[in-house]
Image (cartoon, rainbow, N blue to C red; front, top):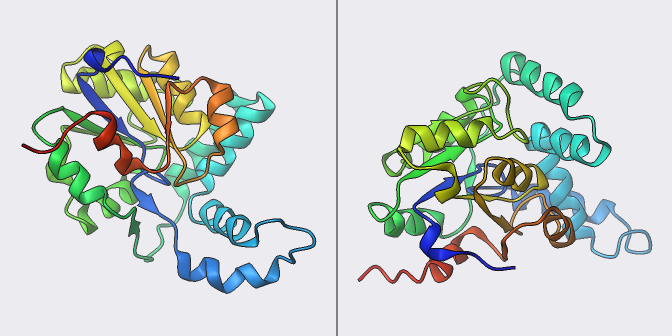
Length: 224
């Protein structure tokens, strides 16, 4: 796995599990309910469960990807995006993401490409004052089809005035990788969210990062 760095002219970021973190306090509370004789890593299992509850769209899209029922599941996701009642719960930020975006801002055009609805996506970005970093915000209903179809990335590329093949899609699930590859973009999988390394590798991620902030090292940017 490797990136063609000179080809990267713009960045597209997923939200849940990529920019937005899960609630570790809830994870700590429910972890004891997963017995170690059944679960090798109860904390990890609890974390994934919390993330699935907080962002059911990602869980359903991942399931669709596994079962090969994209069209049917995407119809469900689109319905959820339109009708789901928004939670008043505050979002959490993956540690270091704000500083990473600050350093990348101005060097690359950047977009959010999320399967969340507009309300949830904007609430997260506004909570952490991140909107200033992005040239485009693409949500679950911005394009005719959401991820894993390429439509959202193609739309983001158009809004950034960058060819899709010159974009890097950064996300934590096979859905993000599939969408990026279908759009002709390069892809980076991150392990701070929903996805497993083996899953992301199998889907053909060009690179896999421990967390989103490692992108700074990969792009060899020091801020000087």
